[in-house]
Picture 1 (cartoon, rainbow, N blue to C red):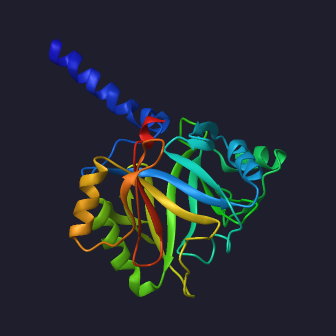
Picture 2 (tube, rainbow, N blue to C red):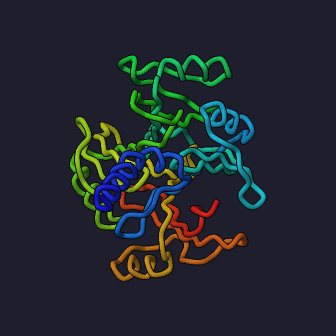
Length: 266
């Protein structure tokens, strides 16, 4: 009887795990100590950008002196500035979310003044921020929450796709695979997708989507390991005034990447 109760308990937790994970702020790390952390945007008008993400279902919260928007699985940060270009054309072309019903979400967001564009099918659409950050919206009818983070889409030369997939697997413990027509690599909270770019994609730094961020368990040791493997740091390991562990690197294709320890405590 006790073993039967234990089995039922285990099965119940397993069934609830996708819901609990979606409700958690940042997901638990993988074996390498890595999960997705945040997307950092450069915005001419921070208030206008925050309104877009709040209308999409994000929640405003404070981090130090700044307001950020949090979604299940990811945080959106903003920096005041004049971006050098939209996300399209850079290595990180766009990022994406899942919603239970794309058309219902688009209708609601349009009513709130959010700019959207249709996708190739009814279960796909795009949100475009005031500075040109492109956000893909995909439908998951089984989703139990209004919105959840899904993917970051990299655009590189076709010949570089196996190499970038391997680099993220080696560097961040991402699990390589394939989604649809795209090679992929999964970290907790996010699927990294790799697509062919017919033109040379520019680095992300300074663009409207300036950088992506990973939350790292034991960041100092992680940085020492990267350094020993030959990874060059744009900013070595240290701490912000708020006590957040921080470092910056750039991947070989020009993606600016922030490494943090402590965002999961928000």
